[in-house]
Image (cartoon, rainbow, N blue to C red; front, side):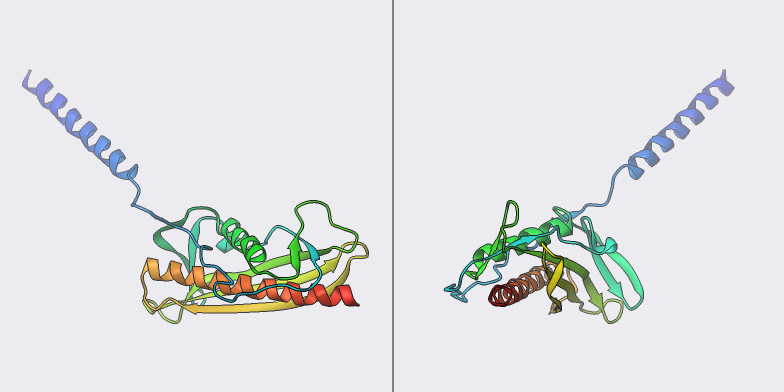
Length: 210
């Protein structure tokens, strides 16, 4: 009887430990959700347009594989990792494209993004984001947020390239904290969007004149 009681007690302890271990494994670390793209690319510029509309269709924004999704990419030299405990509320490529489309709406420029089929004199814009990351000079240093974008403007009719260019933006975070890094992503996205809109505007208007 004593032996049976000891065996039952041991089994109970083992089961309790197993359940405790399962509880620990099923409780993920807390994650803070962030977004970027809220900063206006043209705030306070008073930009207005007096030129003819340039109708542009924008392809889906392309992102590097490592920066896609909801994780915040950090790079130190040749090493890459994701910032622990932080996620974007939506995939980074989605937030970036939303910010860019809003910049085209707010910029007061010649460019009009087409929501339907291209017009006869319309152009096609390709936005290829090559870098979207927090870059550290050394472990624990204050990072810079770097965005590098390749742009191409094409005439769909004959597939001729109207213009190509590369835009690079860097914004210092000021502090090595999640909120400061996210704010730097927000500023860098706004500046990259501003430059993309102005470049598209200038190149598209020039293409109409040629």
